[in-house]
Image 1 (cartoon, rainbow, N blue to C red):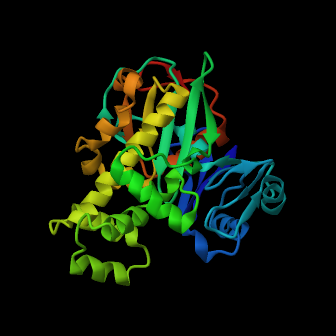
Image 2 (image 1 turned 90 degrees about the vertical axis):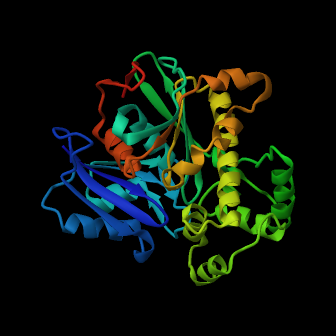
Length: 340
C-alpha cells in the first residue's frame, strides 16, 4: 500500500509518499511547494504525483484549519479541501483530513530523542495525558489521551480562545489590541502573525526605542516576524525586539500551562511549530518556566510536567504518515509507556 501524506499550510505544503514496508520515517518521494502559487490543493497534488512512478492508494493530510464533516477551509488560503472530492479527483480509495495539530499529535508518540530539546525534564507519569501547543503562522493546540493500549490524538482550536493577561504589561497590551481587533485571542499575541502585534504595542508604549536599522529592515520586509527575531538574537541586539520575544515566550508559557492544566498533561507538554525552534535560547532563559508554572495552588502539579521543544521540522508530515499508514502496533515512547 502506498500512502500520500501531506502537511498543508498557508505558506508551504510538504507532500511525500510512504509504504507500509518502509514506514513513516522513510519516504519513497518527497517535495515542498509554495502553497499560494497554486489555485487549488488538487493542482498542487497533481503536479507532485506527475513526477512520481508510484501508484497511490490512500491519502492523509494535515491541514491548517478545523476539519468538519470531512471538509476543511485552509486558513490564509482560498482553498476548500473535501475528502470525497479528493478521492474522486485523485483516484484514491480513501482520503483523511486532519487538523494540522492533530497530525502533529499523531507523531508525538513516535518521536525520538534527536527530535526533541528538553526545557524541563520533569517526572512524566506513564499513560498521562500529553499536551501539544504549536506557534507557527497561527497558534495550534491538541492533546493525547491513553486508552489503556495506545495514545489517541484529539484536535482543538484552543489557540483562538480569549487572551488572558497575567501581568500589568499584558493587561495594557490587551486594551491596546482590543481597540484594533475587538476580540483578542492567544493567536493574536502568540504566533508568527501575533509577534508584530506585541512589537507594535511595546514600541507605542515606549518600553524601548526602535533602532534605525530595525526600522529600515521592517519597512522593506514583507513579513516583519523574521526581522524581529533577528533583531532579538543578533549581535546587534535590539532591546525592543528582545523584549518582544521575552513577552512572547512568557505568553506562550502561560497558555502552555493553561492547556496542561485543562487536560492534566502529566505525560508532558510538547512545543511544536516553527517559532520555538528558532527562539530556543529565549525559551531557556528562565522566563518561560516561571510563567508556565505560575498557577497559584496548582503550581506544584506543573512543576512535575516535562516540557519538550519539537526540533523535527517535518513533524506534521510524519504525523500524517503515521495516521495514514494505520500503524496499529504500539511503539515504545520516551517515557516508558507504550505509544502509537
